[in-house]
Amino acid sequence: MTSLYIHIPFCNRICTYCDFNKFLIKNQPVDAYIDCLIQELEGIDTCTFNTLFIGGGTPTALSVTQLERLLSYIADRFTVTDEWTMEANPDELTAEKIAVMKQYGVNRLSLGVQTFDNNLLKLLGRTHEESDIKAAVDAAKSLGIQSVSIDLMYHLPTQTLEQVKRDLDKALALNIDHISSYSLILEPKTQFYNQYRKGMLQLPDDTLAAEMYDYTIQRLAQSDFSQYELSNFAKPGHESRHNKVYWQNSEYYGAGAGSHGYINGARYFNIAPVPHYIKAMQTTGSAVKETHQVTVEESMEEFMFLGLRLNSGVSKAVFAARYNITLDDVFKDVLEDLVADGLLTEDNNYIALTPAGRMIGNNVFEKFLLSV
Ligand code: SF4
Image 1 (tube, rainbow, N blue to C red):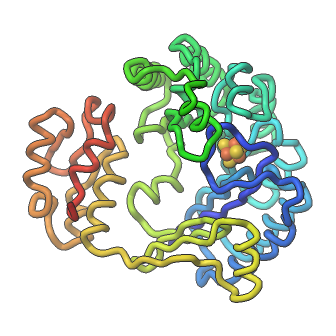
Image 2 (image 1 turned 90 degrees about the horizontal axis):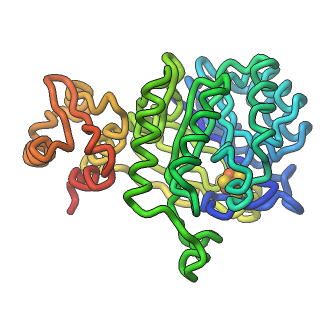
């Protein structure tokens, strides 16, 4: 069994920091897009998934009718045995939309909260306010969605450590079971990036950003959340099973504009602009832009830097079973150096990042590149 990701590339407003594949929904051919998405899903050669994730963009930017058309098709065509997540924005999560999700089997919501601070929310270009957040969580819970996750952000312009502390207090006061906490990364072609280049954006320095991350880890460790991945924290039993598919370097299907998939040892990605995606689906029946057969070397590299994101680390036995060679045979020198530098821990079964290694994860990951 495998997993499926479906991309809905529409939003009601474009956030100032966002570089995802997304488009302002106004005047977009949303119904034609859903037709093409259904056509693409029709071509998938399996009908049972462990996990399904509908992300974006913002899936809740769809109307109730559009949402129902898509979800009813999915529920008729596929069986999701374990976890079915939908991303949502707090102010778009109406009772009617939640009821449709619940009716067709969605059992987990991932809410794009980012911060509870109304001034920062405005700066980020978000459409919601603090008061929308609790209302959305309460509505989801009361209408029977089993599991709710929220995304938070730190290292935001003008943000202080006190604001990060307040965000975490407010998050912990909600009846939720999963928190993702991401650092703002300035991505080219975003409004923030352009403002930063013109000297118009004041960001916390690296030391303060590290304090924010460290505080998040400590604060959540004192509550009933455990960190299980660099940016992810969960109550027992509520780790994101879909995202673990990515971190364990397992295979999955992707559908929709710009989505990625990894099937039969090959990674592929779809055409990203909506009109081009629709045209490709209508004329050729496929929107795949590129496919790449992953080499064994590339697969080992990915296995290491994806797996090391998890607090549990990389299993030596799983590596050996998958590649028919031991971790030591491939990475002995790198492992010894990183353990000596205090960035990795190693026991008989696993290697994992230490707390110091987690602070500079990307620097550690690049040591596992075999092709340089
Ligand atoms: S709602 Fe999400 S996908 Fe849409 S612009 Fe904002 S961050 Fe990007």
